[in-house]
Amino acid sequence: MKNLLFDFNKLGPADAGVKKAVQQFGRAGSRVAQAEAVAGIKRTSGISYRELSLTFADSQRVVLRIKQSGDIWQVLLNGTVVPVRNQDDHVAAVAEIAKAMDAGRQKFQRRLAAIKVKPPAGIRTAAPKMEQVLTQRRDTLKEAIAEVREEIDRVRASNTAPAATTPAAPVAPVAREAWELPMDAWIEQKLTTGRYAERYAANATSRQLRAKELENEWHNALFERAKVARIANDVLDDFVKRHGDTQLRARFRGSYATGIEGYRIREFRGLQE
Image 1 (cartoon, rainbow, N blue to C red):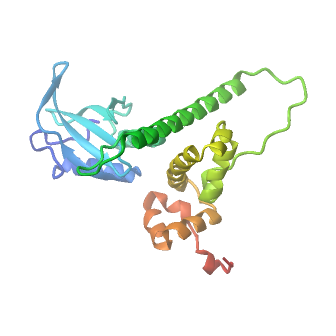
Image 2: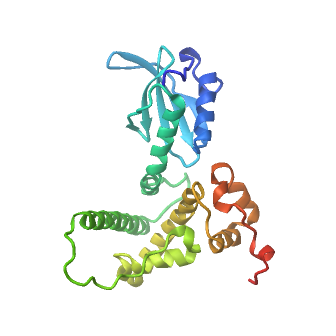
Image 3: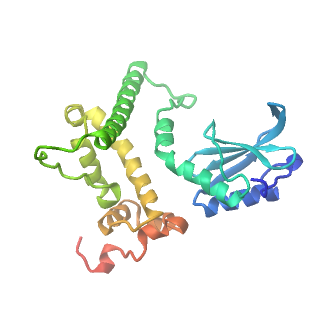
């Protein structure tokens, strides 16, 4: 990214290069919540550099390692070095990093949810109760991972299976996406049709924990959908019912505006609650 230069000695939010980088990420659909320079000069493989940390609205973090010449030497996404193909075009490079953030967002948020949070000073938590809660969360995360692996196995099997020589078995109903169903209906679908449906039916605590995680997944799926296509009216009606029309307009702006294009609340469409 040779045409995106930073002031090595005055690296910080006021630097013109930093402002330009923040602006380019915003145009790519990834809003920077905080930009800060990491104190001190580091050295690796004979290269001296400083680090610029960019924290985004979804809590993901990009670190740009800046050489003394002012150009970017290396990029880290959530602590992992990511290769950047478009080294000579900073606009394309920023779009490339933003795409990597979008692709790994759900995985990052699941990992973030699994992090143990230390209670504030003065708050006491009964050890047996905390152990039970953490055990349930661990089991829920294991189930989510198992579901993903099962889906991967199904995709691989469909790509390698020989042509069927016997009549196919009846096709199960196709699961509907989050942007096609109101939140409660989509969560119910996920809880009753997945691999662990029987367990969720028998264990209210596991069901409740998984349902809470699915609430976040439903909201995230709406924002992802909004970047490329319109969301169904009944889903938007559900969002308005939960958060209000003002929040809908405030949150689905800019790169998310496509998701609510032409939408009017139920009352204005002449429908009865």
